[in-house]
Image (tube, rainbow, N blue to C red):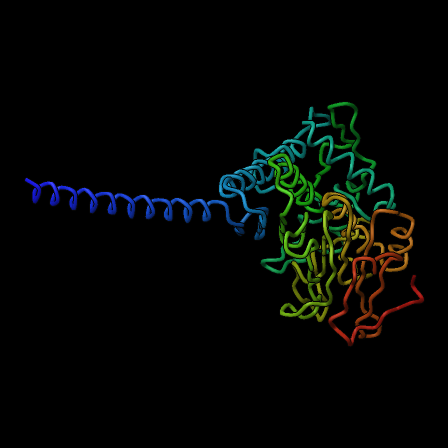
Length: 354
């Protein structure tokens, strides 16, 4: 009897040990799964006609769901503003006669567009769409002077107006293109969603339209500025946080014709590509304004652009241009507060333009 009790006791101890090991194993698995779910997450997907990267550095178990939701939000707004979608609100405006009711988001984006157009004396103009449609950067088609002259009649930001929720066009054939501002607007909507979810350590980059929050490791983000003539190199870098950094250049969409670069940043006054600059970087409180200003400052040229930015307290800019075959650059008065580091040592700083 005592032998049987001892044997039963031994079996019981083994079971207890096995159960203990099993509990420990389950705890280890649970901890690992929890860690995986709460680790920082970075993902890149094709959206807005470019590659969009969402980088959440903070540990959050909902990071996967949050990133999926952000990309869904981006897609919703893309379908609203992009000319690629036949039923987009932008296309409905372009297909309307003289007036049409518009959404609150469209009102917001048109209000900001009008503000930038006024401040830059028309260097930024969303009605330039009729001109842009004449260019084909895939098949390398450039319009004739006669075609541009015919289209310029319908270009002018003052030819459209908004009263409450209704948009009016001076002519039914006026064609708007939000390509110079919509991407920034959509990034801001994505940033707003992240903040609503309590995300404080994150960055969103939509093909050069970047907004960064905080970085948990270094507090700031070191952002590289694309070299406008060497796609595999950087021109410089800045250190930023809780702010938008947008760079536009003549290297994004272009083709060469008779030794001249035909690119996508069109001067609304002439209907031809602007050659006053080759790259512009704007740092601003939000991506919408930074996006639109990038285009405007590019068209304005270094001297007028820097003069405008220097009168703004919350916006800084770096402009790269060519002068007699040399790469030159100039930046606004307080651009250096972002610890700008020049990487291309051959570029010449032009003090006389400030």
